[in-house]
Image (cartoon, rainbow, N blue to C red):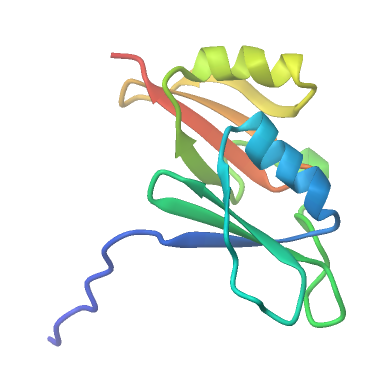
Length: 135
């Protein structure tokens, strides 16, 4: 058997969005990520940093697929495609998300491994998990 590639970590997740400013408000003003410099691509976009991970947003244009989550809203659950961020306290994050008017997919619930998880939709319907250790 040959040697595997040896992936080290997730560098970034790329999302196609309809409105960069609305998404910036969600990821920066809502989740507290930091906007970071982006190379001068020939199409509009924004990059945000959380720890070692980045979110790369591409504004919908002729060269992209449609923005957002193609899954109908009733199927966007904690078990659908999503990505997750670790937070200090998922229950406090849930309360703040409600104050900010963020769309909640699933309120806080405990995982069997002792973590608490909350699921939100970003402005384009991408499912975002916020999780924290309850220990």
